[in-house]
Image (cartoon, one colour):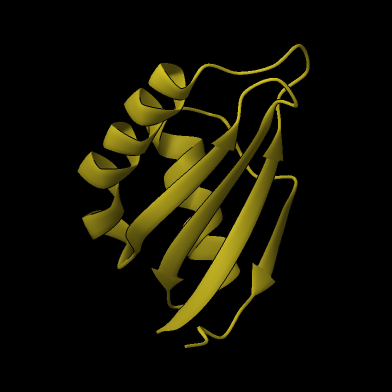
Length: 83
């Protein structure tokens, strides 16, 4: 497994409550794909969402978002956690 950070851009902004609901849908879906969504960050006014995920590969993370709620990431980056 590896860590990935994905980014989403939602035109017109996004509410943290809506992202929380989408995250819960990810958590209900992730086990079928061997994925673990860990945390997320939201910039409401800018419509930006960032998700930290432990996954076997970026495609597995993408499948969870697509299946759970359809809000797929604009990009998925491999990351290494620092201190």
